[in-house]
Amino acid sequence: DAEPNPAEGEAGASVGGGAEASTEGTAASASKFVAGEFWWKIEQGRGHHRVREGGEFQMWSIYRKKDKTRGVTGVSMLVGRQEEAPYNEKVLQMMFDENEWTEERAFGWWQENHDRYERNDSSDGKLLVSGPGNVAGGVAAKVSTKPSDLLSARALLA
Image 1 (tube, rainbow, N blue to C red):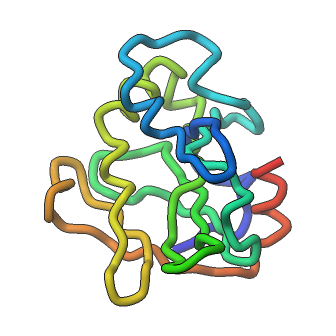
Image 2 (tube, rainbow, N blue to C red):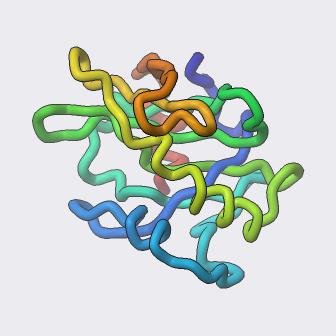
């Protein structure tokens, strides 16, 4: 279910940070919305929230995936496999469709839902996205990797 064209799809969010450090902890712990700080860029109708820097990921493994969990619309994620063992898939960016999300609403949603994007399948390291309310041991779906979209992934990281 990976999308072949990152220009088509739904919006997401991501948090900025260093190559080794995830900044989602910073975003998750921030309690006050500040306009212009949650989305690091707005492009083609999507607000982008950087969760992790792309340097720690295998470039060939990066792809975009819509969040198809029930009750979530206008949200996509940029996912890739880490360069270092155990080579787990992680979310690099969340993208939010500006037709459905404001930056402030996306910030609030991310505060409530960022934990849904942190689990991996222990057998193959694939990202497991749990449905709303299912973070602790709930239903989660594997996200399939399609490495054919390298150029699109690079454009999203730029």
